[in-house]
Image 1: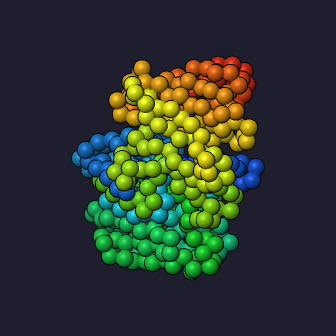
Image 2: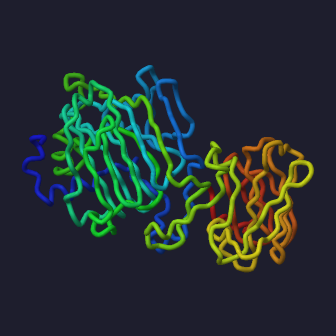
Image 3: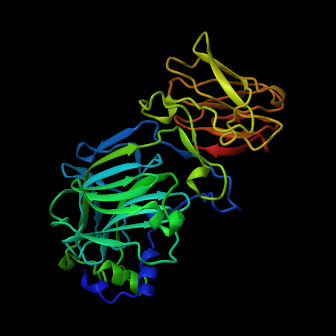
Length: 416
């Protein structure tokens, strides 16, 4: 065990686990917060497998949430070169149960923490965390809804020189158990029932995040710095710059979907609805998938191809896209996806009945998703950005390029 952790008390662990990792923990809408619900559905990975080789350069399905990284033959290099550096990236999609395998070297440096994090919008979380002052171990940890009422979740595992040697760190997350493995050997398994009877078990869609940060920074609390291995001194004499290098990430998604919708504020796995058909889970992006029904509380809009590459959207009895559509019972939003070959002249016509008629023109490529929202007067809508989904309530006005061009024209309820 790392010397600085020998005297760590329960109170210390409580503080250490509430780490100031804003780049990791930020969420724009917590679905379990009744004042924020409903939230935009989480964009999904619409295929079973996703691979990134950072030694070949950048992958656009990852975005930086803080700082920047360098791409070299060693992979994506996350470097702390001065106080305040904390380069962090995240996938632009979520998975709902799956396997994440990261090949990497952790960063050295006292108080420096290298992290692999799976995190949901309601702060379900699964971690690998590495201590820069210890070149012989790694910590596994998890959270349910950010709950820190118990402080016995972390465990420490021996690993050979993680700062100098590439290893494969795996999290295998299923509805019944979490397994952490190093180089294919399981080092920890957590049964769902062992996490406060399942209440503290991570069970909602999560994004994958990678980054390095200074837990030993002077701005952090005493116990955070103690947990991280001590105070960080930013100097060449102390070994700065410190770099974490990620070579490769393999992600398996056990529930491919266009998006994941939170149907209530419980945060339970039963509240998550899969949206969209992923064409046998072989498609590579949200834009290539079609939106399908998710529940039975309202009518769905069904899109049918027509001559010229367009679609005609009509209400379908007994199904629902309530999780994506506007929260207005008097006017139903239509979600339409122009398929391959739908050029600038392709037309998507949505006819949801009482809500009105909207004519939408898809973009010049099949990557544009057009969402047609019924309004009181027919109008023309230009395409949304590639991979985007807009929905809203039915009111008079015009939506153009995803922007409101008339006051009060459209209440935008979702953006993926």
